[in-house]
Length: 69
Image 1 (cartoon, rainbow, N blue to C red):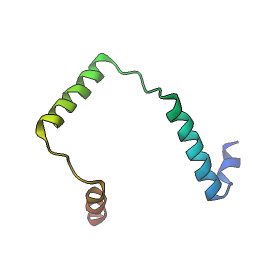
Image 2: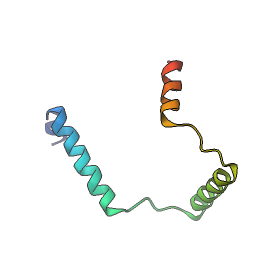
Image 3: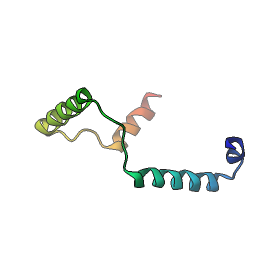
């Protein structure tokens, strides 16, 4: 079955991926997090909010990656 899908034209494969992704997003079910995972996420969010630094723009990161290759 997967091999059959891989033979589809690119446009159809992209449409299929989008349809699958949309169906996953519609379920809005995420991975189960342990209490330790939640604490780490909360701590990182608190540090991020306290820092006030928005970080790098996606284009800046991509450009930096391209230059390092």
